[in-house]
Length: 249
Ligand SMILES: C[S@@+](CC[C@H](N)C(=O)[O-])C[C@H]1O[C@@H](n2cnc3c(N)ncnc32)[C@H](O)[C@@H]1O
Image (cartoon, rainbow, N blue to C red):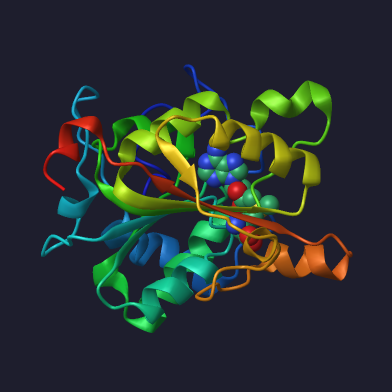
């Protein structure tokens, strides 16, 4: 079976410790088979030299000029929907939960999208620092685990360090999409994002954060949140043009 992830030692080692679930209930035979047979050709391989950063556009054959990235894709329904919607885009999905990785592997294979989807089956905090600056057109972070207890907040995926990394990997004019049904996490993330000098919030009216963008694909967690009367908030930020590129536009 393909080793899960390609980002070095297990997540419990080194500086990055993953706190969520890595495995759920036993995998159905089809999903188990997909992990052995199909995940190999979908895996996003990082350069062996930890000092070398990957240009994700070159992770595809042929290279793809437009790459989108989803962190914590769950079972991958949003990623799959976006890949099916826009044939010009290639997508990288990052998810540490093996059952979700198996689900997306099956779905991508069945949908014939293997040429345009790559999977990093490990912690997003291992991936972001290994991606080349200005290489990703869009990033999705949808309903990340809120870790509601105060003493667990350091486990949240979005913090000042990961926001810096996201701003670095986004191309000029690239977009970061964040959604959450956890008001405190959403608002504290909004505060972090709005004070980041490289990011600009696109909202001009309340509907912009209350309604999803037009090309939105609802996720499993979004449906759960709505069913539990927790209306999600949707934030879109654009990567500002880098100073060195200003005179060229
Ligand atoms: C609440 S679920 C949301 C899943 C999906 N985005 C949705 O909206 O249905 C959060 C997901 O993020 C994954 N996750 C949490 N922290 C992660 C990390 N550091 N790296 C990669 N995946 C992570 C979890 O395994 C889980 O599948």
